[in-house]
Length: 237
Length: 229
Image (cartoon, rainbow over all chains, first blue to last red):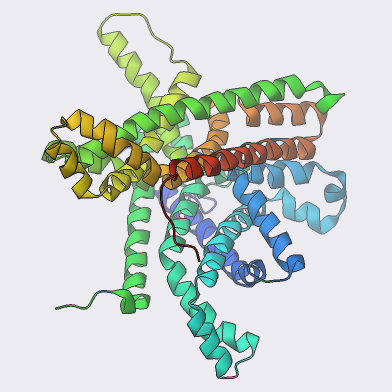
């Protein structure tokens, strides 16, 4: 284990000498896809609970397809599948985008986490107590103000525990990124394994790093919950 | 021709995926029941082991564990056979895939079953004891049927996640449906089409299993009264 740490600690954490690698790449992938998924999920989850079929059905279908297929296949689809199309290869901008493993990975991850986040948020929106919405209407709020002031703030709070799960699952899903040649933690571990044949320590080290990130994320979310869900805590005697 | 002649290979891959998922479900089910028993037991040693197991496994990505266990299992076996002076035993990738997946998802099932066991009202177990039932009898007659009902939503969730996780076994060299479609795509230059085929197969599998699970949930909830809203 010491040998691998000595030789690969830098690659595991931020750089393999030429490019970013390891932990830095994993966190970069995670935060980009989470931000993308979160921002897209808010309007889409409002569309998902909309009464209009034309709005809610496409969103439901999108989320159903992305939740029903493995992320690995979605990544393969964007990285290998889309790039194999002639249309993509001949269009300059598309060719540039889909040739790059990073872009495909972030696209696939973002779309994937967005699909799950839509379900979480739309569930939370649906669970808004009807009294709150009626009170907002009675104050003369229009639909936009109602969403902005009443529904979204309370729905996001309610969604926090489920959303923290999704973020951690997303961290665990980033491990497939290496199949699109993105040098994340697991890619470094695989390189270390290939060079030393010390599988247990190479992958064990990766596992420890992932475990640490998971614990840190759990801790952060616990803090966030105690801040934003403080009104749900039982009163101290 | 149907799927450019790759139909049979993809079908074979689908069968491998299904077998893998079903057998790993069996393994993780057993581990989950045992783990839940250990976590709820009063023995601090069992409790500690089960807690460490679920925390570690659920904190590490399944792909990392898969690679870790898959490679280390073979190397560990080699050390054992070498020290015993035996010939090398080559682990079958399918069998080690089943045990790896089962071992990983066993941790998730442990948590599911633990929650379900805790949901059985205490009074019913005490009533069973009062009737003079043995521990085993209270388990089989009172706890288990209800645990299944309480655990079913969790089980369905785990099953769907596990079914999708089987896509990763192609990375450790098993010829499942993903591997078959990648090969088919490469040799026909229709990668786009065949990744969609693989996705569609998974979508079909998850849809069918969610229908089955919905039916099971209804079945296990017979006799449970719910307030009409």
